[in-house]
Image 1 (cartoon, rainbow, N blue to C red):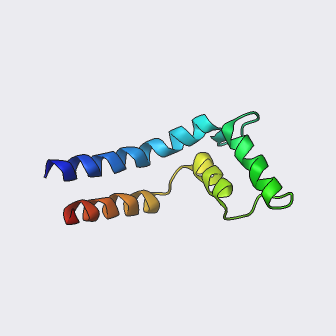
Image 2: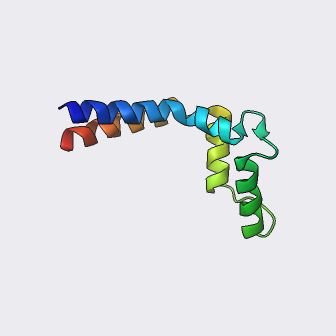
Length: 89
């Protein structure tokens, strides 16, 4: 259906756009940009965790995506999952 096509296209577009959006928020290949939203998130996470940012936490995961992008496996899994979901809807 048309809804399925637009739904899958939206998820694929979001998957491609995610690293760009994270870069704009301050999650960059060179690290977290000073004064950015990412820096504020990192500061809040460090305060909440007693001075350090937890490995595997949201800030760490977002920084990883911002620095390296989504892996081919992750991108493929999101796209395939979206296609299956679209077929079920």
